[in-house]
Length: 153
Image (cartoon, rainbow, N blue to C red; front, side, top):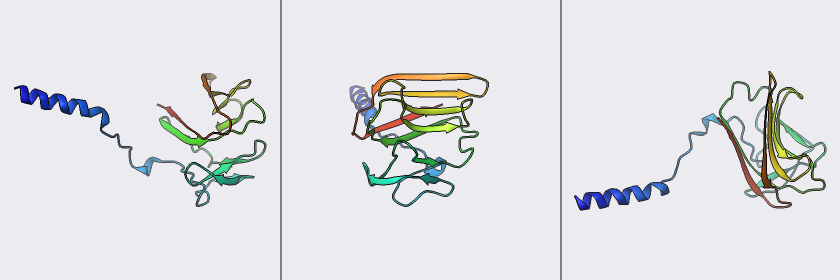
């Protein structure tokens, strides 16, 4: 009995180190690697490339550079994760977006820095007027690569 209990305890102690596996990549809506051009339906505007964490990254100049994803890419999507590496180069503190989806000021979702700080902020407004704000105390560093992931379920 003691041997069985010892083996069981050893197995239980190993559980935290068992790797978690992600689902197949079939569910990925858009993957941007900046090495092989943009996927079908994705357009870039005034984007330049630089060395990233792994391979190339997109450099957004802060005024008119952006990536346009296909229309309605988030329609019918309720559970998702957006993950990316970012590096801010601050000229000003306010309102630098990492992503921004939506149609104007009545239906949107964005992640970026807050108006008056370098703190990370998530905001969402859905049709019908339900607004979600998540202001964090996480300050985005200047000139350093940081991995960010947002999951909604």
